[in-house]
Length: 296
Image (cartoon, rainbow, N blue to C red):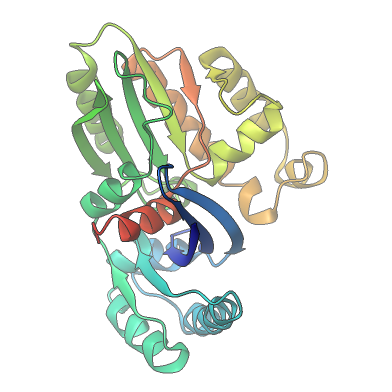
């Protein structure tokens, strides 16, 4: 007997907003399956507002309301029975974040929770990584967003330490990350990985997923530090327009991909990791799984 549930997750990030609809397949005696039914991504760069002027603009507020109305209708069409909507870095820092949340509840009937970096890291870490984590190995999980990056160290299949830093692609584009933040990240990574002989990275986020897709590699194969480094140089050698026309990148991906790769490269360098694995997971996947397992 198979039972199917439909859950949805809304991730309101600093670079884009996503709606993920998942079919949860339950069958007695078998592991529960989480199958993606639909994913819609809307490029509303909230971080541009929040990190530069400290508020979400009226224009972006209206765009968010429209997007949420659309997400609500899509969830109805998909017959979603339960959802959670979480907002991260940009909405955390915008002084009118709570006002925007109230407006969306009133106009689009979507309830949004603004979460801190620690909760964000915990939700992402709750994505089912056991198929990827070899228990005898150590992994540094790096989730790069527009406003913040979450670092989680796993060893023997368990979380050793986790930390969120205010370094993200939209912040870096706006030159809002000072050397002190980089130094803090370097120190944190080195202190937490020093006791482990070999560390591999696990990369999460739209930019590393795109880079992985461009590599043409099989899903379970990692990308090497040398490959990431050469791609970083290659991307930097192209203009913004060339990255769109020659590589087929979306306009809202073509600029942020470079600072994102820089974060992964630094994390690899400071942890001594030679490889980075790129599973198809992110905050929205984590939200669905955390909902299903009663963690949120």
